[in-house]
Amino acid sequence: MAAPKFLPGVAGARTLDAADELAALRREFELPREQGRTLIYLCGHSLGLMPRAARRTVSAELDRWAMLGVDGHFPDARPPRGRPRPLREPHGGWLDYHTQFTGPLAELVGAYRDEVVAMNTLTVNLHLMLATFFRPTKERYKILIERDAFSSDRYAIESQLRWHGLDPQTALLELSSRPGSFELDREHYEALLAEEGERIALVLLPGVQYLSGERLDLAAYAASARRYGCVVGFDLAHAIGNVPLTLHDAGADFAVWCSYKYLNAGPGAVGGCFVHRRHGAAAELPRLAGWWGHDRARRFLMEPNFVPLLGAEGWQVSNPPILSLAPLAASLALFAAAGMKRLRRKSLHLTRYLEWQLVRELTGRVRFLTPADPQRRGCHVAVQFDPAPRNPRAFAARLRAAGLVADWRRPNVLRLAPVPLYNRYRDVYAAVQAVRHTLDA
Ligand SMILES: Cc1ncc(COP(=O)(O)O)c(C=O)c1O
Image 1 (cartoon, rainbow, N blue to C red):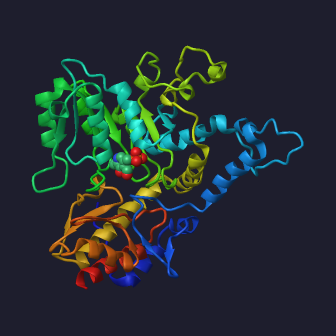
Image 2: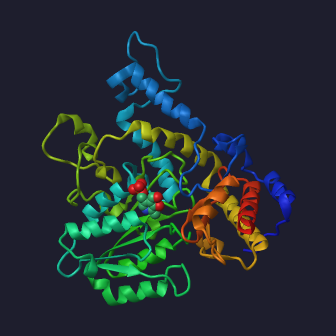
Image 3: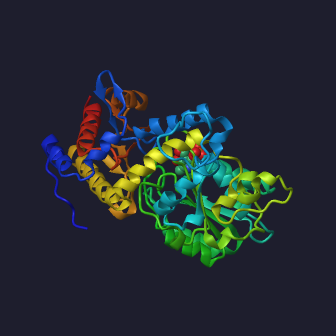
């Protein structure tokens, strides 16, 4: 892809905003403010902004609860007699509320509808998936993760190993980064598989690495692992809603994600899970079951025998938290309106602009942790400063005082995520100016 030409200064940013076909979407979000000014929010990789429509989708469910009580579980085809209709739109009832997300989520992760389900939170889903897919034997009992895996993934994996009576010292393999780089080392990966493949039960890798922002070629990583008979799972926390995904074709066995980052569904929002079709009909697969994964038509018969629903839905455990799901409806409607293709196109350009601004304004003072190839990254760019800020805590406080909300990781990593749904080129321009002034201060 030819490098785009950008114009310097705020005028250059304004020109880009004027040409942005998705610019109007910003008005669909609440923008954090402080002391009368709108903050420069480049932190969507941590917590996405609130879609304005989320108030409506949540309060619609509160109204429904207030007016219908337990009847709210059932479709509006049976309106309660003598009570005003609480909703502006027909409602399918809470029993199947989560199924409205299946189609949009399947599209975002590149899956069939029966392969995805909105449920729980990321680490809980990871444990549920490991309960099914990590079945260590005497010969095959190891798990391979990246050395710098997100802490919760590591805790989950280590606890699963111990749960099975295994010692992480011997049963956990770690994929390192390329020497002198933050990018995962594909050669090391292939070497680990060649050496240990027959003993590796499961590989867990990220879709986009949470710190460096590297986007992995999931199909290639999965194909290598599957050649050795390993189960492959992906953590899509930083990938879903950020980069295009083709989980089914990539051949992943399972994947898990959260919805509070690029999916803008709010703090602690309900996450999701992918289970490849080749497992979806395997009723005999061991799992940690609950009644919401049971045959829907027989769920209330309270029979002793568990009969799992086909597909990813069969891994549900509890009835879903409707109030934590409701904001997802507001956000996914915006994804549907914008389309992932257009979002990705803007994202590639916006992140290139961020990189260009950083190089231009901070030549020689900034080192990129994120791959330079736009196809190998998503929205976020991670940098280190040279020299490192002498007082990291004070540096973070000054950045914040300058109105920038980004993610500062001590001792010396700044993650900046321009999100195509709501960020402008002007935000990127202002963010880099804030960083430069803070470094110069
Ligand atoms: C890469 C990654 N994995 C796992 C998690 C943990 O998610 P949760 O707290 O929803 O389980 C996070 C949270 O930010 C994350 O970034």
